[in-house]
Length: 152
Image (cartoon, rainbow, N blue to C red; front, side, top):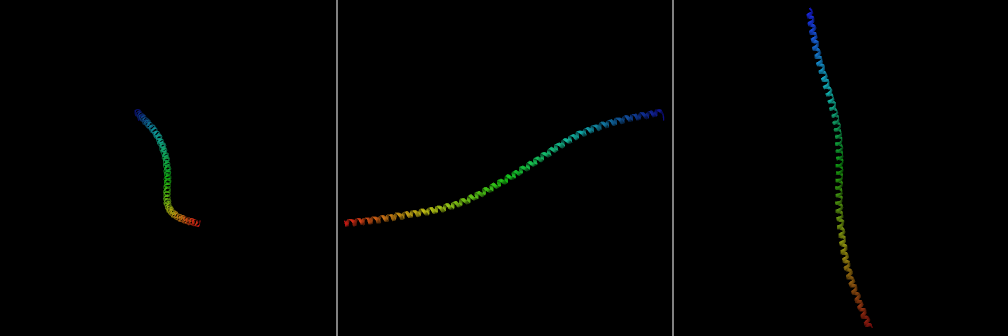
């Protein structure tokens, strides 16, 4: 080989090395850009994961609150049903008591009427007997006076 050939080979090798350095530098720059982009994506991913965790916790709290509300609502509905049932039972008892009281009132009114009629009959009999008695006393009184006057 000639010096010129060696020189050409050295020049080509030098150019290839320069191109290889440029390619490596470009690749290194691309790797740095990708690593930077990856760090940004990891940061974004952590942010998204924190948001997801927050939303899951919030959803869990909301679910618990909804369950508690549903439980309280169920308790209140059952309480209202019991109150309604008790009110209906009370209404039924009052209705039965009212009918019983009406029957007792009717019975007492009948007894009162019967007693009043008996009292009126007794008063009439007393007046008749009193009238008869007064008549008899007057009659005897008159006879005694006549006897006394005849005897005097």
